[in-house]
Amino acid sequence: NIVKKLILITIAFTCIGSFIIYHNKDIVFQKGNPIPYLIAISKIKKEKPYVKLDKNILISKNGDVSYLFKHFENDMGIKFKEQMGSGYIFSDGNKDYLLTSEIYLKKYIVWSIHEEDKY
Image (cartoon, rainbow, N blue to C red; front, top):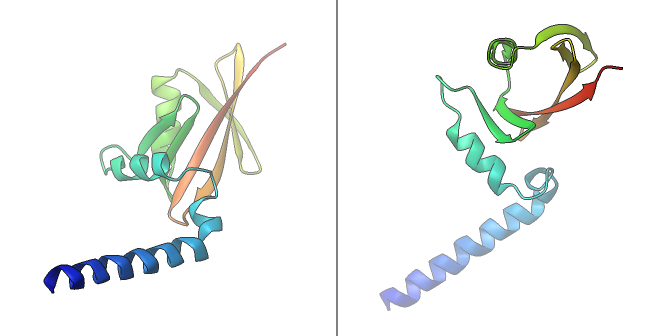
């Protein structure tokens, strides 16, 4: 009898969870598979406010991003040049780096770094 109730509760939660995910599928799957993003989000801490998701992709909380710019300037050795719309241009003298942002799940920002050789 207890096993049947447990099975019914599990089925009910699975159905409710599936309905919620299906109803919000455009948000949940906006960048494809959400699992790597959710794992990265879980690693964001006060002392580490951004997490590298891939070679050229980082994720941070929405808000002040000066720490991210400091990371680029100090750790990567590139300097901020200018802002163009929602993109930020950095340079190391040989290459330009375009940093673009996209809001993810309202509370986070996914940053993409694009490299371009100078001619």
